[in-house]
Amino acid sequence: MCYTICMRKPSAARIEKLRKQRRKLLEEMGSLSLLVHGSLFERFSTCSRPHCACHQGERHGPRTYVAVTQDKVQRQHFIRKGQVGAIKRGIRQSHRLRELTRRITRINLELMRQDALREPEPP
Image (tube, rainbow, N blue to C red):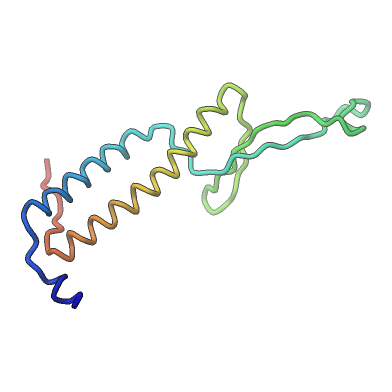
């Protein structure tokens, strides 16, 4: 049954609708300028001053970091307080990028099944 449904001739309107959806998603991808693919975390620390209260349990912090994998190695980057909001937004944008990628993939697969997936024309 699915075979006969899938083999129907696609309507030009349906194909154009899919292409329009894809263009809109690609435009949104271009707006993700704060994109950060990483994980945010906070930690407390002790300093190098031997008589500081941090050595008796009153640790410094919390300090905020972002963990990012680069060249197969995870690196942790300290985030200044004024930048925490931008990093949080960048991480949300990273999640949105993955969702956009999944949606565009579904559209392209449907276009492929309809024999309507083509390379874009060069500008």
